[in-house]
View 1: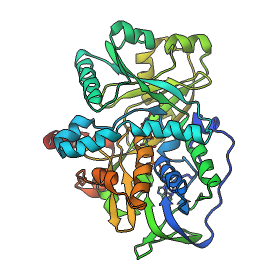
View 2 (view 1 turned 120 degrees about the vertical axis):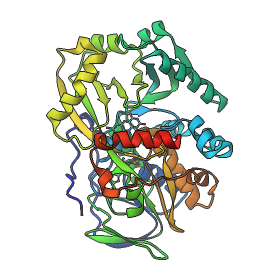
View 3 (view 1 turned 180 degrees about the vertical axis):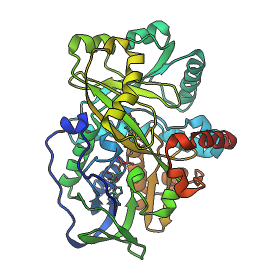
Length: 429
Ligand SMILES: Cc1cc2nc3c(=O)[nH]c(=O)nc-3n(C[C@H](O)[C@H](O)[C@H](O)COP(=O)(O)OP(=O)(O)OC[C@H]3O[C@@H](n4cnc5c(N)ncnc54)[C@H](O)[C@@H]3O)c2cc1C
């Protein structure tokens, strides 16, 4: 059993969440077609795709809907994957790359479809910018544009020094690339809206119902403190918060923390001066900064990867200097919220998708860029459960690398960083 605080963290998102119900705890033993562990985007998207096809679904959440990364993230709708399609071409071959490339822009479309179909109020805005800090990164963006266009995507626009100056009032950048198919959302309200849609379609969500054991039988049984769910199929979507429930999944991934701060409301004039078109922005560093305006004109600024930074002052000390480096003009602006969240890193930085048994499926480890991928993952999981495995199998064909050393490597990220980078370079991934 975990010792996690099961309430929402004191984030800007929790403070501005739409009115939402508290879902019951699971009490007693029930049966269903598909049981899903985790009410983040992966689990909720899978649930919605299944419910839309008449499948009977139960979602078990140890805390609250969107309590994990899905309700804490930067809210940036970023297309493709944490490693781009050229890396997949090199490591998995052209056939798999073609299949994954064809799906690289689908997650963003799924989000927009769900928002529209279920009238989800989540402050959806179009347009995301990749900002280059130097000439090398600008060249990489040119390469990325050509790559994505090769896979049929035509919503990109390169920005020169002048162009980037027109979308973000920071002197740090030499150029950038605007993705008109990117954008941003209030992440927790997206998750809450998806949960509400699950409920309306007849799905059952149980909060504060941690899966504490899985009995792998012909029909898997998931045990919680108050009851159990027997299902024809089980989907594991606990990602970075799954802990040790499934040792095989823990062994090949590593939770990493990243932190976000939210300023006080800046007012219309200052907000418009900073990011005139209200795009979201991320820079091109490996340990990137990501930021955007909220609907009430705060700057939400995230950055860095520090395993397990939990103390609020610590978070502000880590992230505020990054914000001021980008926007020195915000020196006098107060920080009103700070929070941390965990995403799940894999060695290849590509998602891990697969089956534990014939009737237990999982998807995890989108390594930092998961808002779009997780929505795609939900669709792929549902396709596989409904008997069409082609696209699921394309992801499942990606190689999974273990994190050798087990618990040792659950140590602070910084301590293993050197090893991680050298390993990644040696693998050429
Ligand atoms: C601070 C932060 C900023 C980020 N910013 C961005 C961004 O701007 N753009 C982007 O694309 N990606 C971003 N990401 C990554 C993105 O948020 C994640 O990839 C994505 O939300 C993962 O969704 P998920 O459903 O797989 O996992 P989660 O949202 O973490 O959901 C997993 C759920 O499973 C539950 N769970 C786990 N174990 C159990 C159990 N045993 N029983 C019951 N329930 C269980 C957890 O409580 C949790 O609610 C960010 C991540 C963080 C942490």
